[in-house]
Amino acid sequence: MNEIINRVANSTLVSIDLDDFYTPGERTLIDLKENLFQGLILREKDFRGFIKTHDWKSYSNKHVAITCSTDAIIPFWAYMLVTSVLQPFAKTIFVGNLLQLENHLFHNALQAHNWSQYQNAKVVIKGCSKVQVPPAAFAEATSLLRPVASSIMYGEPCSTVPIFKKTLQPE
Image 1 (cartoon, rainbow, N blue to C red):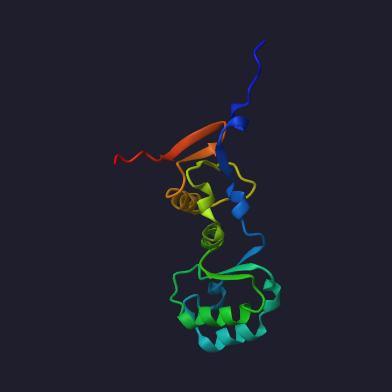
Image 2: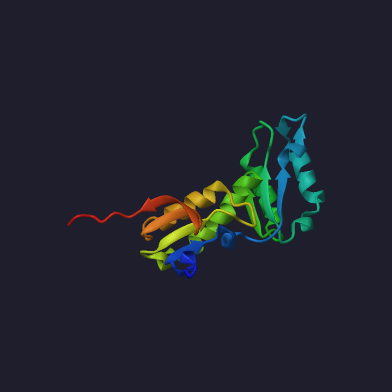
């Protein structure tokens, strides 16, 4: 009788799950279009009224993206005012949409990781995730791994797509 051998379990592959780099917490969006006069102009007096009356505590411990979803010119001071009142409450304040916020959160987590532990390793970046990992996180992880790993693959250890393999440089 032939013994069944689990070659995946016995391999030297190191698996990286980008779920591990997910920053927990609720994400929310502040869209400045709601404060535009006639959908076109942000008037300082009206905007300052909004700043004074809005419930900023409702953003406690949240990751907040600030954007304007219409094609209006928003002065820089508007983002600064919103940031100044959000800062005591929000975990993260980011100017952009929710996808850009997610990219930013993954970027920070990936940059904080010690990638040297994968020196000369055969690495698989897992493809299936419990959370929605943005494509930018896969690209950044690849960029950070390439200088250290001997090979990078995508997928699951039993079925991978080769991405990168170091070649020996002639002396």
